[in-house]
Length: 277
Image 1 (tube, rainbow, N blue to C red):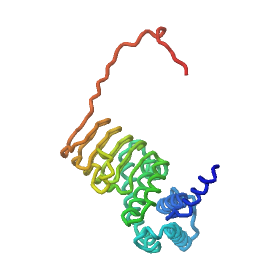
Image 2 (cartoon, one colour; image 1 turned 30 degrees about the horizontal axis):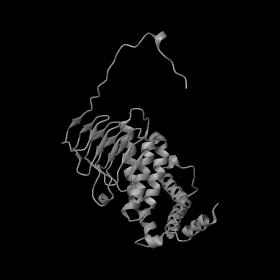
Image 3 (cartoon, rainbow, N blue to C red; image 1 turned 180 degrees about the vertical axis):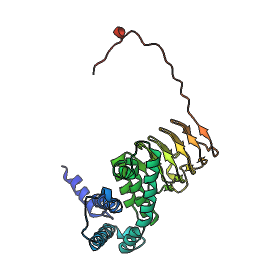
Image 4 (cartoon, rainbow, N blue to C red; image 1 turned 120 degrees about the horizontal axis):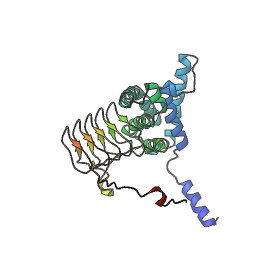
């Protein structure tokens, strides 16, 4: 390797301001979700004191991660780590509601335990709710590390800045994208491939609301794209599959996309060309 390039890389490493171990952050996030939901945990505890000790170790783990980025923090690592742990009862309560919503919303779901153990939608929302708590506390970078970890594991991309209400159900989920300034109400259900995004991606829009608002009890079917910070989907509306929306719809709307599908008689089987690649 070129020695000048190597020297430049060394300088870059030397002057890096923050040391945020991504693997430790992801391990911490996984451990928190396992702490909250015993079906996901392989660890067993001999006593309440053993459980309390494990919880304290997790808090210390987060504090050590935050220690590496002290100059970017508004509070001390100890204060922020305590604040995150104090958010866990609320996160747990919200996630129980999410698991219940998925169980009720998917006829294939046999139980809440099955949803918690296996559903990618639940996994993505669980990591989102932890990342969102950190985001609200002003912790930089770690929320994005966690959300991208969830994205890689589930195919569901939820920005930690999004605001999502109670009883949120993601059915299947792969390809779902929820932008930073999206606001989602309670009892909302989205299917796979849904995008809640911005109309424009100009950098100057960074500090304004650029993603849609979804009110309570809305259902958004597969492949729908809803864009724009001023776009509001009124309560109890249904947005059909593959709909492209850049403007608001009133409450109780039914919005469908009607593709033109042409059907013609197929040629006789012996005349069909079969390609082999």
